[in-house]
Every structure is written in structure tokens, then in C-alpha cells.
Image: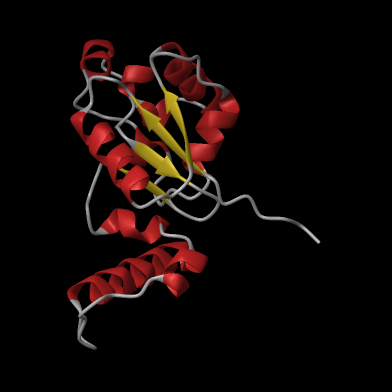
Length: 156
């Protein structure tokens, strides 16, 4: 039987306020994660593959076209081979959008308070009990919507 690793990896940089928000949210919700500071460590091709494996649009989902390095180099990512682009990211990690949050099923860039809820593990969702909630609770609706969106993205 294959064991699926659903550990979340949070790719961050210390100067990124959205990264701090995502990290704080994961900690407050007691969701285990491994943080990788893209500037403090050297990314590997496995990191790049990890980021891309559940992306909808490949490199387009993780590269920040507003980054200085992207503009300065006038990159045409459509013309680059996978290995070239992966090596470029490894050498120039600030080209990445931040944060990048991944597990074995979901990849998300940036911090969105509603969308990040898709990373709540099923066992925690099953244990979650709202106090003083109505059947039409806003939290339950947001979690259900995030899960539907995540499932729809995986189905594509």
C-alpha cells in the first residue's frame, strides 16, 4: 500500500508579508508544514517539480512576471525548455511568486484567506465543531467552497 505524504511545503521569503500571513494561518490552525525560504536555501529541481505537479498552467503559475529579474532579462518562458527554466529559477529564486503552498494534491500561490482553507486536512475538518453555529455557517460554507474548488482544479 502506498502512503501518501500530504505534508505541506511553504515556499517563502523573509521580506514577503503574504508569506508571513500564510505561515501564521497554518500555525494558528495547527496544520503541520515545512517552510523553505527560497532565498535562504538553494532550491532543487525536485522543489520545482513539487511546485509544478499540481499547477494548472505550469511555470506560468509560479513565475512572477512583475519581478525585477523577469523584466531585466526579458525572459520568454515559452521558448525555454524545462531544464533551462528550472535552472534559471534555481539561480534566481526571486522570480517566483510568493508564497507558494503545496501538498500532494494542491498548489496555491499568494495568500488568500478563503482559498488556503483547502489545506485543512480531512481529519481536522471532520473533528472541527463550530460553537454557536447555524446550519448555514459562513465558515462551513467557505470550507465547502474551497474544497469544491480544489477538487475541480484536480479534476482538470
